[in-house]
Image 1 (cartoon, rainbow over the protein chains, first blue to last red):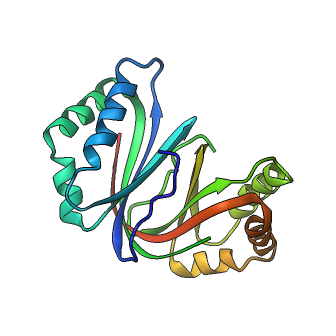
Image 2: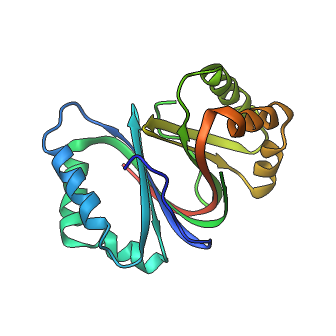
Length: 105
Length: 105
């Protein structure tokens, strides 16, 4: 995921997921890879950017709020979210934001 | 910067800055630290989250668009932006987004 997402012109939506991990892998890496593969096929998905060094930041981009809602309720993703609560994250914050403009180089 | 920003209840704004670095430090780390110190004193600044691993993601949070505009035009920050264009970044994307809701653990 080491790239800058090639999103369309705004407006569109961003889900900013910031997290702190617990110690150890415990199935996290495999699930993380699975989620990255799965999210790419979701309706309304526009791209994702992800980095971790201490804190982890994953920003996924979406066409609209309905697409975000559907992804949040996707069956395998629900399971991943439950495991995240139970064992992978010591804390996290999810922010839903509407991208209003952008500029780039 | 390895922490989750303790932002207030939405609405507020996020500046999502995603970048790819050129090779070598060339003054980048010192300027980055200086900017982190400087931004914390800006009017309307609410917090920042940052991680780099391949791609770098820095999300800063702001009370309103006017605060973001002022920070973008801050003298030392303008200099940092110019050097970023010239030598530190091979590419970047800045997105301005309005945070509409959040949830956390």
